[in-house]
Image 1: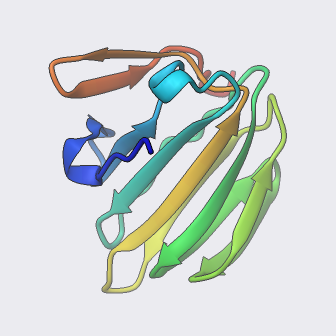
Image 2: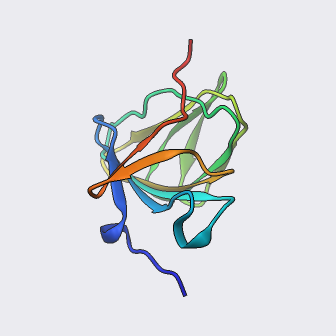
Length: 129
């Protein structure tokens, strides 16, 4: 059985109070078709608007609440909410309230990531033009 805890996963600090733990990256445990991250967002933090060129993605809210933007739409999200993000679609999440927002994202096919010394950086996401 292949298992990874968030404490053992490579991290990516977005610089806006959001820390992403790469639980399953490209090729981990022999995986070919999926990437999974656990993301912890400080209250009031905002993810930069970005898009993945060829990947589908879902966010599943585990704890807290926030506002999710996908394309031209924005919607409040909370624990138990799943949001689907099509390829090439700008998206971002903002943590609302006084509590942290935690979500899991799954991406297929997996995004490219550079991993070194306990840190990871995505290499295929694009900022809006």
